Length: 440
Image: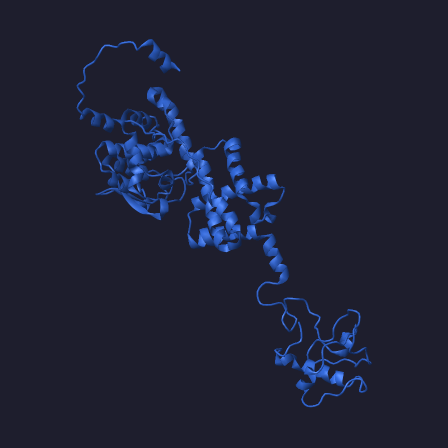
């Protein structure tokens, strides 16, 4: 740091000793400064040079060393270390300590490893602490970035722990999404779901790394892929009856499966909501109903029919396989998984397809049972707003898909229309020349 009059009072003693040393070096070439020490300092420029600085002026306050002999003074000399310039690295204060904040090495490490730090903070701070995202959301985002980092490692030949944010360019993200479709065979819906997780991270990075705004905007500009919107699948009354007649009521697993399938068809609960049900969530007396906490941590209450209430009362009287308050458990007494529900449904469907041929053309998943409950309510004339409340939908517009799939309502609307009375005419072939022009 250059010598200036703004140095702290703590370092003033060093310069006073330096002035005293200068005044005593060579009386025949330097006049001893008159007046105060500050006036003496102003008359001399820091042109004394020597390699033995420690012998002349101590860097540390309060320490003295042996006074050196006379040295070369006042004149052009080869470039060496200056007497009044402290030998301390840049970006330090007057005491030679690192400035407040991060040290120089830590600043460099931040530039090198900014992406791993950002990704950890995205999960721990943004998703868990600030948004309180559900375990399902965190697991979905986690799987997305595991796939992305493996793809980036293959393409860039860099370990995930040393990736930079600038390595995740928009072309790399696009190539990753295309690779998922080609190698893993995912649909456009799953592709858009992975892109949603990536967008969420880059929106978080926009606040943490504003210098990378251009890169972030290019990633956020990647559009969703359009896909075919097929009609929702559901089961008809004969198909529901064929499915519910399959479970063997003489076995513990058969009684459990029938109660679970009937609950899914009549209430429209999601698989995660059914497997998480506890005994205290069921009220099987007057006004029988079930309480559950669904998507978005929204709690809702769904009424139960008398038939379903009697079946559940009989099921809860069954001896439990383990000390647990879960309504539906596995044979080992643990909570049923989504794959476990899918397995038992596929097992009973294989038998039901032999009894009901229309089931052979349908792909039935646990979520199709939820669609079946919605279609039953819609065909019974229940308003769409009530169906949205029943299923726990965020918006009433979500129930529009059931209107599109209800062919019976469209047939009723067609029957109310008046057919047009048009006279049928005889077909006459067009002119040869006009036929030629039409065929071009």
